[in-house]
Amino acid sequence: MKEFLIILFSVILIDNLVLSRFLGVCSFLGLTKSVKNAMGMSVAVIFVMLVSTAVTYPIYWDLLEPVGLGYLQTVVFILVIASVVQVLEAIIRKGFPPLYKAMGIYLPLITTNCAILGVMLINIQETYSFMAAITSSLGAGVGYMLAMFLFAGVREKMDKADIPEFMDGLPITLMAAAIVSVSFMGFKGVIENLFG
Amino acid sequence: MAQKKSAGYELTKGIIKENPLLILMLGTCPALAVTTSAMNGLGMGVASTAVLVMSNVVISLLRKVIPDKVRIPAYITIIASLVTILQFLLEAYMPDLNASLGIFIPLITVNCIILGRAEAYANSHGALYSALDGLGMGIGFTLALFFIGSLREILGFGTFFDLPMPWITEGGLQPMMIFGLPAGGFAIFGIMVAITQKLSKKYYSQRPQATMDREHFPGSISQRTDVVFEETEVHDGPRAPRTPARDAVPPAETEPGAFARQAEADGESEESK
Image (cartoon, rainbow over all chains, first blue to last red):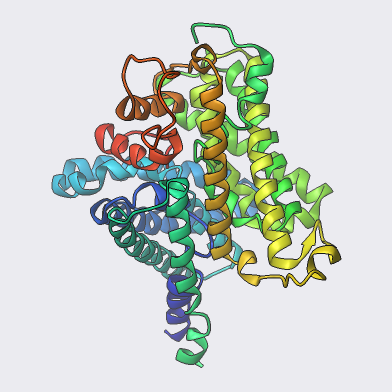
């Protein structure tokens, strides 16, 4: 249990997916104009992340690795992610129309979101157990959501600020991201103190 | 698409005018993650360029064979295979670089520059021009990564290509670790974008209208940018007489928001992840 908690907390706070591993930065910059969009995208990412981990993990360890085809992971994983996204989209559209309304438009964007493929590859690299891999994916997704939510809040405030013309638009957004990222650096050492 | 572009134009448009990273805002993840040193930035840029040129050529040659409906999965498979080949080459010949780029080598697969160019250019042009387009875009991407990497290495560690720079550090400038950390990456990137937008404004206002003609393909990045242009600028008026005032918004400034709006509007935009 402790092992899972350590993974969960370190992935959410210290190795935050967006702010320290730089995965999913495009959507982080593109979809944080409003808190609503940010949350919709985050929920979709968590969903796809968990399902694709549950699918890619057995594929890699039970299918590819035993026959020495581990190097095909990139090709196989990206196809799995694309299919998972397609299937999920179809299921949600048929079965849960309100949910589809909320996150449907974000699903196609996720195929090329490097956060998903990145987390799959990290899970394999770290040789996690199946449950640990699921925990790490959940943590990564929640960390992504946290970063998106905080940053969307910052940007909503920034809309009202008077920004120098030279920095207006994307540059000031990136500077704000830098400051948010500094604030996450404050969590370094938290894990050691929490869990010994 | 209407008029034939010269080879030189295809090769150089990626450097400032359509710089994939700093103007079109594609491929930001590797740009921030691996640019802790000049060497890493250069390595990542060259690796991505190699994949970009090859994928553009392959996709251009296969563009009549691939059915339109399944083109995105087909492109992704082609790109992923090329990336796997590249990963083998790097493992064999440049193990150090491979180790320091780590997970971001396989992640070239989902770099939106590559899929974006496949969809926007190679899809509808011949192999030679597609190769030039890939090379030009790759050069722009490499240059941007190299500059960001150099700045971060010099300011953050006081070295350049792993060589110490005494004439900077002895002048009283202490290496500032923050630039080696993620926060410094965002900050340097922000400053680079601001400078490029400034340069781009200058470049735009010097050029006559004719050379600014953008390609119009369905779903292309250029077209998305044009949507932004139409939203923010006078519809039919020529660009020249307008003063470069605050309202002359270059594409990248409004682009992320525009992508989001676009995504809301039609629910598909593969390039803008």
